[in-house]
Image (cartoon, rainbow, N blue to C red):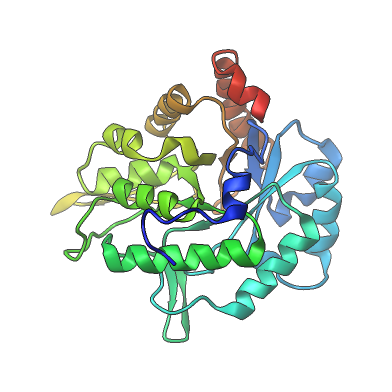
Length: 304
């Protein structure tokens, strides 16, 4: 398990051509907006939830999600599996995730190329790992286990990073390509993360984008970042999810659409939430850009 070049799992190969989510704009579903969504029934392709907020058998979150799910496609996005961690996956957490996915049958499930737990302690952050053979083997083993347990193909999200490791012996895009080839998983292309990481490390984000396995992209994330300025150092970009999408990230989105065609696109906003109409208007900006590209990529549009 976890060897680059091995045959893909049968279930992953079978699902490889499926476009689960519609090639449309979506929003992260927040409790503050449950009422707005049910009242207005917005013209969005899908909503996305964080799995860990729904890992209980009942309660108001499930009441509202069940109603909203009846009208919209659903993406479930995990933040706690610690795919990049050194320890084996938490099987209790994985069982709870499997129960949630069985309950709602989402069109997509995704997780991060990051770690968030170590030696029994959970850290409320998504932390980077070195890009080397040891990490590759571990990440592939973890993804294989997730896909086997869930009986579905997952998407892996590229990380936002602020430090790099001397232990890395390959670049991030190469590493992600190896993971996709090894496991048959898909790619959740977070363009804000790409822009933040490449800016922080002085790299060409356009070259990074083109080096990724773009044929595996099943969803795109857009979000806003914060800029920390220190007079003694270069500005540091923070993946804050607390601001509108920057113009540079919108431009990168246009480039991504030119390369891969229309694909499900989520507007993320987790902090400093504005009123629902403000978020909806920003998500619909992505929708208009998707529509402008749709006629140029009819095959991808039909597949969605």
